Amino acid sequence: MDPQGEVTTLLAAWGKGDPSALNKLMPLVFAELYRIARRVWNQHQQNNTLQPTALINEAYLKLAHAESASFQDRCHFFAVACTAMRQILVNHAKSRLTDKRGGGRANVSLDEVQQAVDQEAAEIVALHEALEALQTVDPRKSKVVEMRYFGGLSVEETAEALGVSIGTVNRDWRLARSWLIRQMNRESL
Amino acid sequence: MNPDTPWEQIERLYHEALELSVHERKAMLARASSAVREEVESLLDADSGSGLLSTPPIHLAADLLNGQPGGLAPGHPVADYEVESLIGFGGMGEVYLARDTAGKPVALKILRRHLIANAQAVDRFETEARAASALRHPNIVTVYEFGESDAGLFIAMEWLDGSTFRAIMNAGEVEIAHAIDWASQAARALSAAHAAGILHRDIKPENIMLCKDGVVKILDFGLARHGRPVGPEPSSMGSSGTISGSLSGTLLYMSPEILRGEPATSASDVFSLGAFLYELFCGKHPFAAETPLDVLEAIECRPVIPAGSMRAGVPLEADRVILQMLDREPDSRPAAKEVWEVLGQQRTGWL
Image (cartoon, rainbow over all chains, first blue to last red; front, side, top):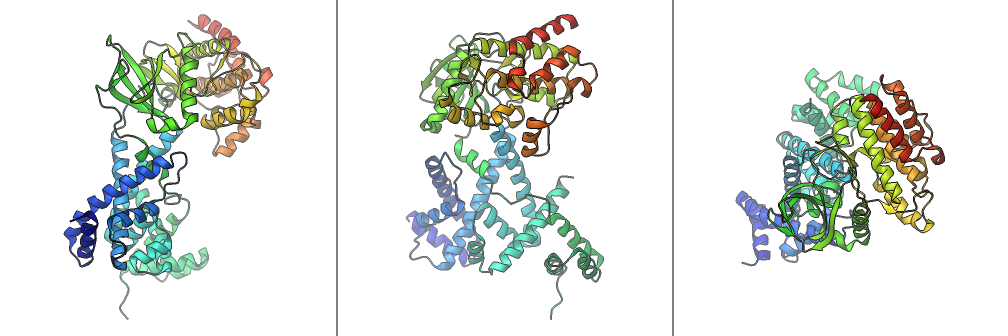
């Protein structure tokens, strides 16, 4: 089966409640997002104009038969893609934090950019863990944060993908943010 | 109507409370059970005062897509060198420990391939190679070779085993006798660069290393530019060179004239070195402040408290020369050579 057909079939299966479809879908989406992001990045290396939403849209056009896929399939795809984006970033943050080498022995000054990256990496790992805890309390709020923060979706796109109102997304976001800050403060004590 | 679960109650009360004044909140929450009230209150407390989720993780995303993870594999040849391991990376490239044909260790700095399209990056890389290779001095990192290989542009330089002064100062207070010795070596290096007509333009503790044998080395001439030994550079360099250069440097070590956008001179290097020496002697930065804006203001107009008033035992002469180096008027600052002479005498007197 061609990859497009495969993705469409998997999306439909997952939409019907087959959890194993998600496991097959994720690596395809993951690889495609990474490939597109790399290309976009090489074109825009001078400015930080990486738009996760644009990547997800492009991956969707590439991977799914966009014209024949249902609206629901598209929503599911966005949900999967945002989870994939989260995984990509968290994996990178973790490997960055564990591979720290050099221990002051290097002939190189780790400049401010690198410090900013390390700081973000540590924050993202902590955020990821806090989100896992929120997932057990209120899965939808955890999904809202994943879509908006890791997937870069707007409030409107998030509402559409989750099938809820814009007001709900805004309220979920506000409470989730407070909840996560509190959780992260507790963890760091 | 079904009664709310505790979580639903917390959620409802949280959103209601956001609409109320602090006083009204208290009254409303008084009606809830104590467990629910505590939850809502702690969530409301967390609501303010954190930047969490306010900006997307762009730095991390950029880093992810920027680097070839792991970079060059051990054994990879770069010209006549063989890569051994990755030891660090900065905004511009990666640094490897490598061996030359005789097996001697070298530090290999490689400019990442995709940045080669960026003319400014190449220019800066070449500037570093040329400036540093023009200098042969025991207190300046020695550049062996500059060239291009299939891995990218590379600079092969002396392998240094030691720590940057940022790491040393982070580790705790420095003994006065050591501070004098190290400060004098750093001033000697800067004096040699200035004598050769080269400005460093990014003097800061991250760019100065202490080797295990006690020798201080200045590195990273990436912002250096051949200029006149004294006096301003041609104005054509002012807008592109100086401004981008000053933005790449660290705010805390920038002289007032650089912050005003004026061209760098040897006196600006002396100011930056002065800020570092102050910190080395007394453990405090002369212009430390809460926000970047406060730092700017401190550099521009906050009186400097002499290092000797911050810590007992700082020799009077060192205290005085550091204060002169931090003079807001570039013409009133001593030359690097004078700083070296003053500190050199102190060092002899001390040992």
